[in-house]
Amino acid sequence: MTHQEKALSYAKENKEKFLDNLKEVLEIPSVSTDPAHKDDMLKTAEWLVEKLESLGMENIKIYPTPRHPVVYADWLHAKDAPTVLVYGHYDVQPEDPLDEWITPPFKPTQREASLHARGASDMKGQIVATLSAIESIVKNDDFPSNIKFMLEGEEEIGSPSLADFMESHKELLSADFCLNPDAGMLSADTPTITYALRGLAYAELHVTGPSHDLHSGLFGGAVRNPANTLMKLVGGMKDEDGKITLPGFYDKVRDVDAEERAELAKLPVDEALLREQTGSPALWGEKGYSPVEQIGARPTLDVNGMLSGFTGEGAKTVLPAKAMAKISMRLVPDQTPEEVYEQLRQYVKENAPEGVECEVKALHGGNPSISERDGVGVVAMSDAFEAVWGKAPLFKREGGSIPVVGDMQKILGIESVLTGFGLPDDRIHSPNEKLDLPTWYRGIDALIHFFYNLG
Ligand code: BES
Ligand code: ZN
Image 1 (spheres, protein in one colour):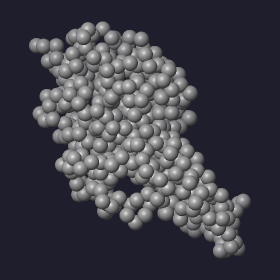
Image 2: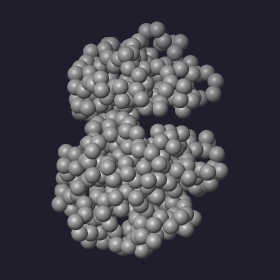
Image 3: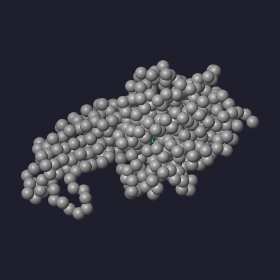
């Protein structure tokens, strides 16, 4: 048996152990946005340290940041082999609404072929898949490439500390490329490599009017209602053709050329599939672009939540003193969050009526990115997919964001191989997030092939 075959058979024999590892880390509620979970963040970092130690990794260290720590480790003894920097985020999104979960979010539960828990797919499952592949190799062999880890706890809040961390640790993090398994697959039988990510600008729009909530009969009709005003402002941000009306919004948007549009048109994603995945009765988006383009290659603007007035059972005749909307804009190259926040402020300035005050608060953002499709890492991953799935991966643009990818290009000068083993119906960020286990196990095998392909 070759070393590679030994590693694959180790992976086969240790499926239960790998799954137990995953369940263990899924039990820690590492919700980065919630200060109440600060200790859980450190606990998760410590869990990772212990695992990295057990794999024989070296220079393991928890680096504190202003919010949540970064875990670093390396093993650099492979001669004449590239150095791969493994990226992961050990934080998760909040679990709410809790009552919609069939089983508790931090009590990983297996139902049929899926493991249900917050973070199972996004992305503790992907981190544990990578660690499991490495374990399968190092139990029988020296590692075939040099490897470094940078595991952060702030991705789900826009990675606010990571750019500074990379700036101040360029030497430590130097590598030939990054393996980033935080992007998913098109379907269980379609291995996928992502080559573009959208960026993000997340803001709150606050509208305030009267000094306190008013009786809507005694005063209604004579003052401006902040809730009505907010809705009108937000309603005007997108026109009937699905175009965003913020001034200058499209100025920096890079066009997709005809060749790429033809390629995107070949992806196995059509209207019917998207209707099924979203449960939405109809699709709607920017005129002149296909849904795949609307999601992957065009920017958008969406309300993520609203707060105003009375929302309890029954009726209360109140004219609210204030209203707030959380608004996220997904960006494409070469838009930047900073410029887009300015455009939002400008729109509000131009459109806000007298009688209310409006304020835009920028929360967090991330740059969009386009990645190289022919680097050594991408080739090694493609070959690995061929070996396990029996077919070459498809290349897609992703509508979601992973801010570190663009930042790494800029700060560390390295490209990322964006892949992963999550599926579109994993309900990431939603109640009942799950991970498809057969796909996850195939992913572990693919990663074993990937590391040997680098050697
Ligand atoms: N893993 C996701 C992004 C993703 C999902 C990429 C599926 C490819 C396929 C990531 O954890 C995520 O959710 N990112 C946030 C980033 C934001 C908070 C800056 C997002 O896109 O909302
Ligand atoms: Zn996420």
